[in-house]
Length: 148
Image 1: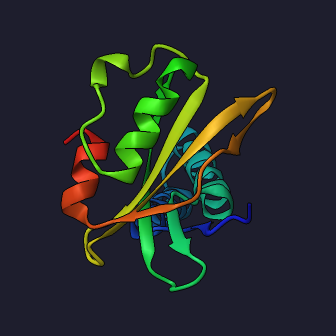
Image 2: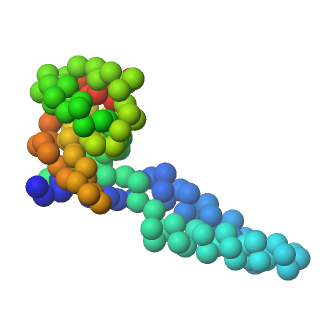
């Protein structure tokens, strides 16, 4: 299956990087002790690294809408229960969550677009492979899957 969502920088990512770069630059340029200057270089380096690597948002390739992602992990024996919850949205027992890593439920949601997509993935050694299609929901239905 092709990947419908790609990782992008969220507004939060940009704000964090900008604040770290500004703080590091300020500490480096101020005429203060050498220790503060060294700390400024480390903060500046951390800001640059995060600018290059930090991407916590997701964007729908087809529509361009930005989404947040939540992952829920379940044991392999929960497969049928989760698939039935995806076809007709209902609350998934949260007590069964984190009892194993055989299944991962990815939920992409956007409050502004009032849309959510969910996909079930199965653990195949060293990676998770999709074992269902993307199911589309509105936010009211998705809140049941999100456990809210």
